[in-house]
Length: 301
Image (cartoon, rainbow, N blue to C red; front, side):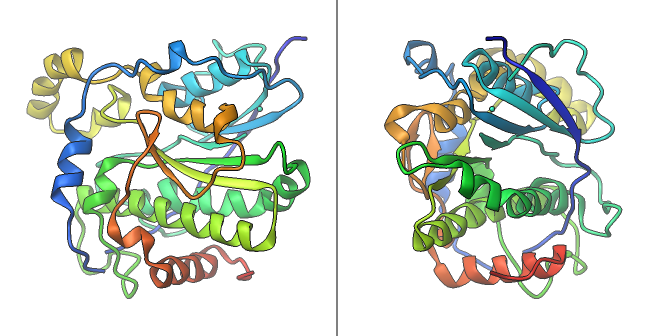
């Protein structure tokens, strides 16, 4: 049967944050300097996904497009959740499903969403936090204990240097584009782990994992200054991954048979690795969840 494509618009939310944490520079540097093509996926046989549905945010371009395209090729019905400003959908025809969060922004000038959240925190994190919670009951009903629903969140190695200030999640005390981006990626890992903890405690057939795509040549670098963009171009051709290579870990996490029932993990290059120390702090995860619920107007469950 032919795969299908559906499109919905998602404008996202936002908020910036910063709490002090020791920076694990060895882990950060290792993650940021492990370049080269991602070769495991072409040699990995992924099971067909006929009859399943995937929602992919940011699926109109870059890694989101490659994720949606590959999931559709496996037989999923893929729903593309896009920002209203994204319009590159004409090439995406006859696609078809998982809940995969690829959409994001990076290093943008200081700004706020329509809901007055800092752009990185709102679009990269809070929007996905809200969407997951709005769909959670459906994910629970759709999953089976031998075929769990899956939530896959795209984080980044920059989460290792991310900081959270629970007293200033809107970043009123000062703005740093890199700080805002890295803290949004840290928040995604904290959210991923806490969601898995809640799902496991309730015995629900849903898993939640975070993935790191590595250094990928995408439009996210368009906000670099002109000299930095010029310097990046030759380096990217030699060392950066293509969007298709960057999407590989997300695709694996969404479909691989060996990951059935596996949740609460951080994957890089198709393997589980350690995330930042702060992400294993239950109290920090719980507090971020509580404040996130308040920010988006959800009742904490």
